Every structure is written in C-alpha cells, then in structure tokens.
Image (cartoon, rainbow, N blue to C red; front, side, top):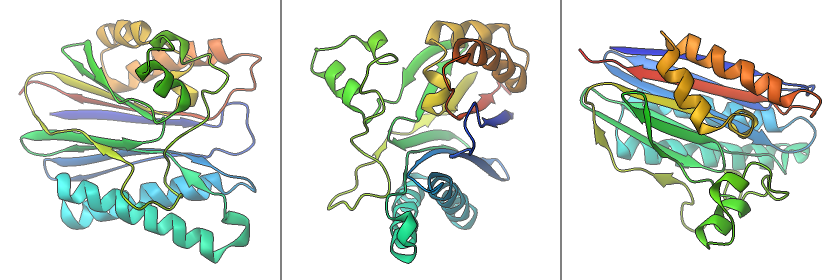
Length: 243
C-alpha cells in the first residue's frame, strides 16, 4: 500500500518557484519535485516544465531506469528550448528529484540540491548528495555535514537542468526492492535547510500518516524561518506500508 501527501508554499516570497507532482498507474507511482532558478519569475516556469515533463514521460512509459533517464533528458531539452524561445527566460534553471515506485522496486534520481531522504521502519538510511559547493567541500573533508545548512555558499549549485552538458549531470540511484515499511521525503532546500534530520525521523515515528508527518515538520520549518525572508519550501512524503 502506498500513501502520500504533497506540500508547496511560497514562504515569504512573492512567487513560488517550486513545483511538485505525482502520477499513478496501477501499482506504479511517480513523485517529482523541482526548485526553479532564474530572474523575471522564470524559475517557476523551469520547475513546472521539469515536473510536467517527468509526469508525461512516466504516464507514457511507466517506471524504470530507462524511463528515468528519458525523464531527465527530456526535462533538460524542454528547459533549453524554453530558454531559446523567450529572451527573458535565458537564465531559467531548475533542480529536480524523481522517485519511481514499481510493483516490486523503488528507484530515484536527482540533480541540484533538492533532496530525497530514504527511511526504513522509521530510521533514516540514506539521502541524496547535493550538487553544491558546500557538499563538495564535505566530500573533500573541508567541511562537516552539519555545516552545509548555514554555509554562505549553500546556494551555489554545480549541477542543474538548464545548462548545456556534453554528458548528463544527474545521478540515478541503483534500484532497491520493495520490502516492509519504507518511507521517503522529497524536499527543496527551503524545507531541509530549516529542519534537521533528527527532527524528520522523530516526527516520522510520531505521525500516523504522510500528511501528519509533513504538518509536524512544516511547523518546525516555519518557526525556524521566522524573520529570515523564508524561501519557497516544498516537500513530498511517501510511505510504503507492509502488505
């Protein structure tokens, strides 16, 4: 059984440049989140283009690694085409994170600093690694993981959709089997920067549903973001329950 809930909020900004989406086809699901970048309000165009493209590809072809590769590739093409078609959209870019749930497997991929957190039985097992300057410094041993949230260069991204590439810059995780209780959180940086992983896990164990989990976490996000000109924040919670 798959349960889920989606959240997207403008925070203290005028426009919401985040986009979220999902699609279900029988026992297969696609969840997607994007955080747009770019002047003239075009970040929201980029993120929506990415999300809509991913949903369309999944609706046509279902879940799987080949489909996920096409999803990232076609989203990249759609954004580059949008840049060429609109002078004011030349700088639009977006992060993207995708979760596929098939009948017997799960798989995800990402580009940028929108994250996916993977839990098993309420315990955090893994998260995607940001394509950002602070994450690179962590990998080089020059920064501690917990210092990413407040680093002055935390918004400097090394990989996004909307920049020409010779080889694809997104990352796809190897598929995992569907087994027991598995929980996922897809979220933009406006969300994860304001709540620590310990709180995510604490509320996961406390919540009775994905919607309640998001609500409990959102309270912390809003409290920690007060007086800070909060960025847009978005999250998608997905629970796979034991049969």
